[in-house]
Length: 274
Image 1: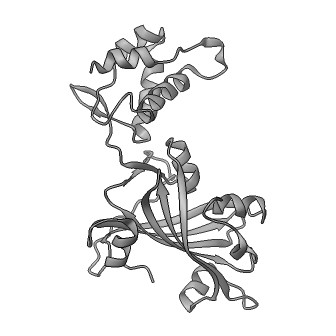
Image 2: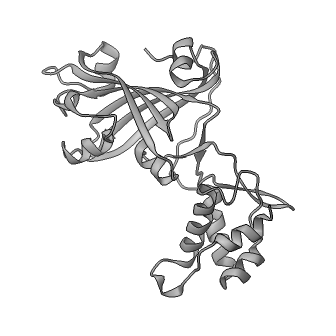
Image 3: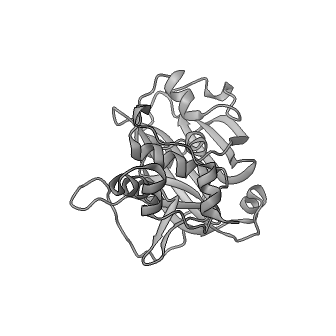
């Protein structure tokens, strides 16, 4: 198939009067073409000059749109050859405080969840310390969920939410509703930021069964502690993510303390989900 001709035939127009910046319009066109399968993994996108000529826009506008998609992980540049569509791995953006549901919809995928466990339990000492639970209520709502994109399992999560912040969370349908949306709207919690650690690991037999992968497949172990705007911790999540389906992209800005990056050599086994 002639990719450039097919892309040109399917592409939308860019209009000055649309009320949307020109680079954003081009970015949306390219992103939609990727999500709709017009531009496929490994395809080379049209050159800067071709995009300028096709849409009647400047090189600066084209570079801004393409650069944004490279930053988000949809495209990659190959010096001397051109710009290409990345592999179909899911592209999670860091360090934005994300919602799995929102991220999958942003990627044009249909998110879904299967709740394996949803109950109120007494927190152990480690969880009490991490979530700074008050002496008056040491309970947490424990959620075990499989997160899916277009019906394919991606993550297995174990989440702990302080009972005192949202005592009725156990009654919510988390298979069809976003946890973060419930926390924002029903409980009026002001979600703000989170710290995550990522380690390479291998799926256990049970995790592999749930995620429909071979036993001992490579994976990411992710621990997240998330906070409200008043610095109160509201979430502890420990999850395993399929290594063949997720890629993490971090934006590093020179001379700005926007991201704390630390590399450590550790002589211990990766931490596991308890």
